[in-house]
Image 1 (tube, rainbow, N blue to C red):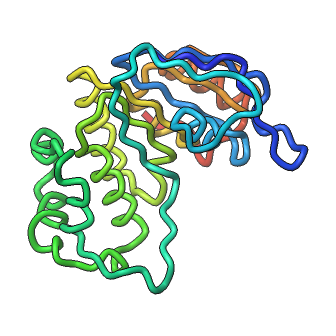
Image 2 (cartoon, rainbow, N blue to C red):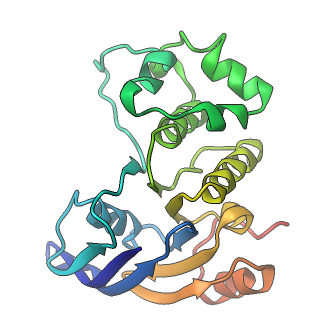
Length: 229
C-alpha cells in the first residue's frame, strides 16, 4: 500500500494541493479525476519523488517496490535524436517483461508496433500513435506499481478499449495501477476506486458503477463528454 499523509504543495503562493491524505490499496486500479489544474499530475509526481511537497509524507508499505511511470506528455525538441519505434520500446531492455502485454494486442496494433511499423521514426507518428507507444513502453516494464498520467489522451475509442483490457490484465496478475484522468468513458471500463481531486479531496473510494459515476459527473463537473456504457 501507499500512504499519503497531509500533503501540501504551494507554487508561487498558489495552493496546488491542500491537506491530501489518501491510501492506495495494492492490486487495485485507482483513478484520480479532476479538472485541468486540479493537482492530479503534481500528486503523481510527489508519489514518484519528482517534486517535493511543502509538507506531508509519502509512505510505501515496502521498500523494494518497482515503479513504472508514464508522464502526461513527453516533449521533444525539433532536434531530438531520431529513434525508431523498436529502439524506443527497447530503451529499458533489461527491464522489459512484455509477452503478456504483446499477446493481448489486436493483430493490427501488434503489426504496427512490432512488425511493419517498428522501423518508423517516432517523430513521424501521430499524437495517438505516439501516446500509445509511450503507454506500451511503460506497461512492458517489470514493475509492481504503474503510475500513469492521462494515458488515454489522443486515443480513439478502439484504443481506449484496448487500454482497458491491458489494465485489467495487469490487475489480475497482481499489479497496482494509479491513473490520473478526466475521461469518464475510460474510468468506467477498468477502475476499482475513484478519487475526486481539485486541490483538495472532494470524494474518494467511489465505485465505478454507472449511478456513482453519473453522480460525480453531476456534482463535480470535470469531464469532456457524457458517460456511455
